Length: 109
Image (cartoon, rainbow, N blue to C red; front, side):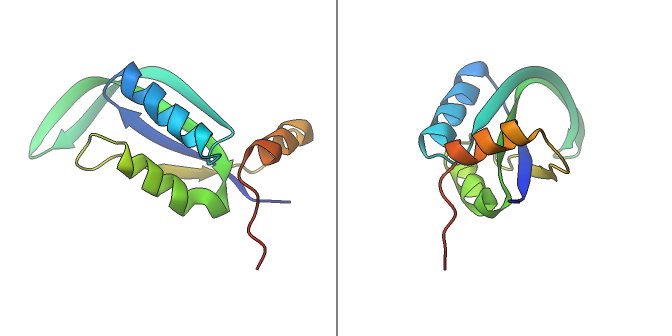
């Protein structure tokens, strides 16, 4: 079985989130991108900051992570974008099969 992950990033607004989602889907680097609003609290440049952001949860395969990172950075407005990957330890076979069908094929060396 392929190794699947969920990649999380945040952006400042829905338009940027939707553009990022569309780019990842068009490149077949993501099978699905969920966009949700959140309130973020964080340290930035010596101060505690708060902002309203959009969370993008990206469903993909582990082997595509370097390309997903490049695509996020290319389309991300933040100086240091959040890019975190979590492993999918289990999933419904039908959902994982659908993901595999929607993602760019594995490279066979």
